[in-house]
Amino acid sequence: MAKAAQQSGQPQSIMGYFRPILEANPKYLKNRENDELYELWLKDHPDQQEVPQQVRNGLSNLKSTMRHKKKQKGKRAEQGAEAGANGGTVPMKRASRPAGGQLERLEEQIDECLARAKDLDREGLADVILLLRRARNRVVVGQAAR
Image: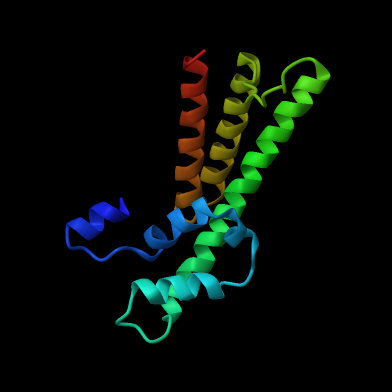
């Protein structure tokens, strides 16, 4: 994508410049010092005398993002290894759906709250009444989906 930007005459993004370098050389990702990367950038941008703060910030953000993604992949791999060690699979967290009777009870409770809000102060609680109606409608839709 960075090559496409250069070929089209558009300036290359900071992250587009550094991402392939970091992917090819993971040692740069581990290292907190960026001097070598700054030197590479200055070589490729001879019109610049020093690395602008925007480039420094972009590199720091990119390294942080890539480290975070790497950690997430590592966690997933650990879970897979645990599943293999346990002889099974890692149980997936499932969004439990309340039983139909529970949804009906919830709808009734929202109706009671709605009636109480109307009795207390219909105009002053107009926004609360609107939200309660929306909540009740969502519960009704949930019941219909069953």
